[in-house]
Figure (cartoon, one colour):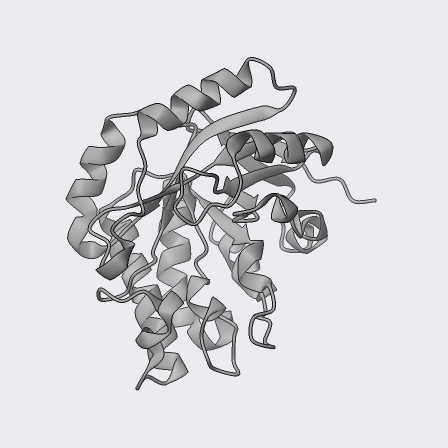
Length: 269
């Protein structure tokens, strides 16, 4: 079974700490089937985040050059940051280029980036998490030109709460509409292994029931992304996930080429 890292960031992201060349070399050494460069493109980002964008033409030209001498797949991607107030601008930006894969992600809630911690002040965990999921649903209901919903669980990464899990049991009322929307549109739900790293002594928990419910609702596609910003994290944790997805009813892993789902059969050893 070949693995594809469908979510990575290189020098075209301001927080990227590897070049495309370094990433491709690392992915090749790891025996991956391919790697997607999905650098940050956040429109109207608040505060000091307004530099989170890149020139897709330059980005794609470099990918074309690397493809000529690579033995693995290298895919033209973008991580499109969605906000309810910037959806029309997102539509216009994406329409100018052709991508292999578009990840839609929500990084800002009501103009605040939870990465910096201010978002959580004065909020209980249920209010903080549910507002994030409400924002995701609002965005993907009104903007559908994407292939993958990225890190639906981003909100738990940096939270100060002891409960660091977006579980179906507790947040099903907010997750259900999101999952239905993705299943109906034939879009993929990502497992982003960056969310489940230990930070400040706490490790978020992935609720298997979310993916089981997604499958029950007709969801077909799950992608695996490391969200790597440096070479040592490429494909981190991806090989541990197929057994869980198999239990949830999935028989294939997915990546996208020219906006078309490509599936690799899950093989359990």
